[in-house]
Structures are given as C-alpha cells and as structure tokens.
Image (cartoon, rainbow, N blue to C red):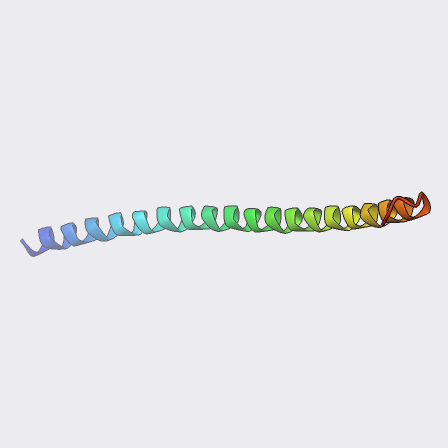
Length: 73
C-alpha cells in the first residue's frame, strides 16, 4: 500500500516537473519576444527623432526662403 502511495506521489512530481519545463520554455520565448519588441520600439523612436530633425531643417530652410522673397510680415 505504501509503495502504491509513493508511485502516485512520484507520478505527480513527474507531471509537475513536465509542466514546469513547459512553463520555463514558454517564459523564455516570451522574454525573447519582449526583447525583440523593445529593440523595435527603440529603432522606431530613433526613426521618429530623425524625422523631426529633418522637418526642423526644412522649416528653417522655408523660413529663409520666405525671408529672401520678402513673404514674411
């Protein structure tokens, strides 16, 4: 009877270990995906900053053109 109880405990421990391994793999995958998203967002922010720099430069050029053509008040 005691051996049968031990077998049930061992079976449950094996199932828990299996589930734990699966959870660890899924967590690792999620961490990888989150890391990829963070890199993507960092690149996106850099691209937006570059666009703002270019737009600022275009605004300055437009201001100079308007001034040369005496289109400003």
